[in-house]
Length: 428
Image 1: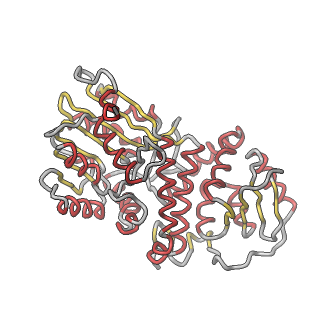
Image 2: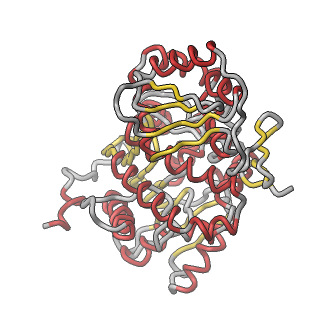
Image 3: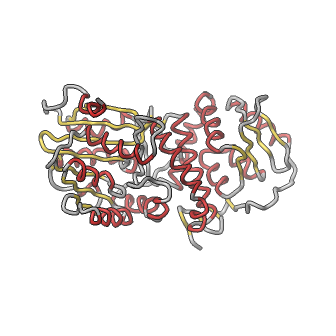
């Protein structure tokens, strides 16, 4: 039995989640008064969003007098009570295996639910309790991190090539103009990072978590830097080395298949884009020590990471099925990296809306390649990733998820910029 992201190819997620075939008829069993009453109470707690729920006997429950933006189809009583008990954990698996279905725009549906959770005091309290009960991120030890990264990034380079940009940037793009293409916005992101680091020819850079290596190649090719990049994804490292060789950059970029904790040497700049989410807050002290020993006296650093307005856990379904061991930190939590070594935070920029726009592009490209993806993976995998991309888009639009770029330097370094002119002078 082939398994991808913990979900088997015959559409069985676990002992309690047996999948419906998309063509299977719904259970016509009895719907009790209690079933309907509990569901109506839940919709009321969510502020009666413009969503109708269709139960397994085709009875439709309405929570609002407004025209519904979507309909949620619940196939059986067991699925209903799983949703009521803990939707954050169970909705994803139920959707992925056709136990529930959404008719209408999936992103709009999820945005409506997120707004209800955000604005309901009762739901917020329940969410905190359930998060405490159910969210147990996997460990990010040396062995644990390797397993977690392999689970997500070593699926198939071809899979990611279908919906990422040409430079294979799997992190938030930067859209000075919201109408620009994804390719242009990802190049803008890399330039934005390089300008923040004030890179100049001959600078040495160490990168923690390089993805498919696009930023390192960009730094070497366009800024004359020498870059050493660490990554524990074998698939990504193999791809990055081949791209560097093909582009004639092997003498300026070195890709090392190893954990960031094993970084050695000293550098003019430290950069990490999209890796902190995988570190885990228990390991921030270790990361801070790595940065401290790696930077020269006048070294600069930048960390680009998904974050939160206040401390909390990642959606437990996403942590379970997509990003094992992941934790998006609050800004206060990120300070645990900097404070022990007296690093000065120089600049914080929030690119939340830029990530929502990036995800819109990814989701559109994913759907455009759905036939090819369906030939590579089983139907459940296809729905898992559709929900992940849709849910992430909705989360950046409606909840507390943020995208932080934090620039820092040593506390005694007086060579820091007087203003932000170096970031925007190219626009003149």
